[in-house]
Image (cartoon, rainbow, N blue to C red; front, side, top):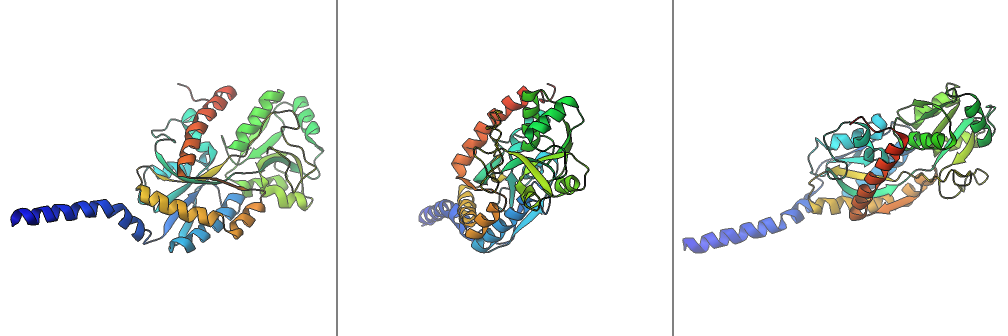
Length: 322
């Protein structure tokens, strides 16, 4: 009798263990989820991610709350994941700068192994802009001035070791230019200072587009594989002979060790949220398009990008001393 009860108990435990991930996934979420983004309020990332979070909230049945953590080249959300529980309630935007971090800063975690990759969402459309009244009328003028005035052409970006910063440094290296880089915490303060005359130029995503269309800024180039539909007369870096395409894909990550059932729940919710018309329209305002990768594809992208970024950091001589 005791033996039968013991076997029944063990069998019940096994069944319970076997369905535990399913049960957890079905019960999740039971409270608000925090989604940390790497840039401040008011910029393109903040605007579009808030639409995505609102869509996901409706699908998941709990609020997805945006928390802005700007600075440190867009790497603060990923760093915060390292001390968070893998319970699905703490998520982070993963900008490309995360994959450069170990090569430039001493850290005790691995961007590939210590993040659970949920899905890739989109990427940026970048370009170089100057004030409308600038004497730099086109890219040729920009290069000529920089060559004639080493270190005097000031340009702003959304932070040290972000894609705009590193791409400009790569351009400068290829053309033999010495530029004066001024880092900002995000697009909103960067545009404010450029429009206010504190900078000569800015390298940024197309948060600058409304200012260009309003006649306040002039766009000198864009960084995609093809010209932007909104600015068909503006050349790409490829057309200018620089051989560079930069879209800086980003998505959503979570702490390492997350239950696969939770990963699937979050992946499915955010995939549905990102494909909703209002999110696609929000991205289009900044010339961004969906760049979907599932969890496995995004993890593989992280591994490949980690290796590629090392090559770029080494080429630019920005690696931290060993």
